Length: 118
Image (cartoon, rainbow, N blue to C red; front, side, top):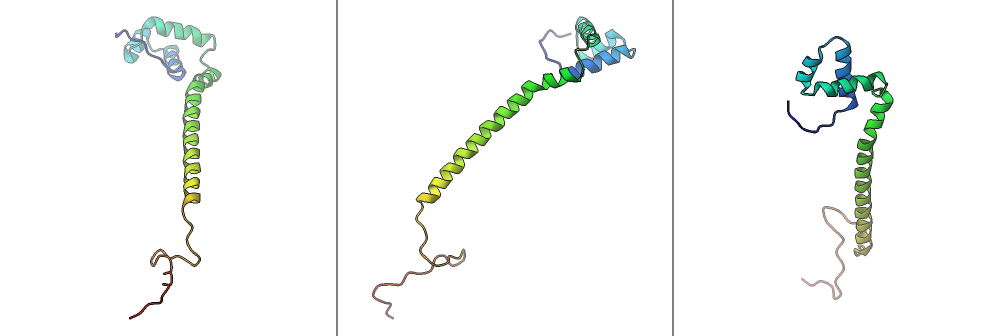
């Protein structure tokens, strides 16, 4: 077994403990999930104390949800700044002269001062 610090979800812990309680040998679970038998035993004790119920699973998800909310709030703030910038740019842009504009033809031509001669 490798010696490394890993975090396991409450759902995985509950699944392993329930497999043990259903009759799967501790050694087999230890090898299949690459988890120390002593750790599984401590999970069994916690399971029996009710620490792996749905309330604890939801509590385990709170930090993930808070991180996601913070990321979304940053994105909303960034988009709000972009919208304000674009509104300011639109206000500074010169307004078209009276008359309708067409995408194909553009704005109407302004009359020349001296008139056109051929």
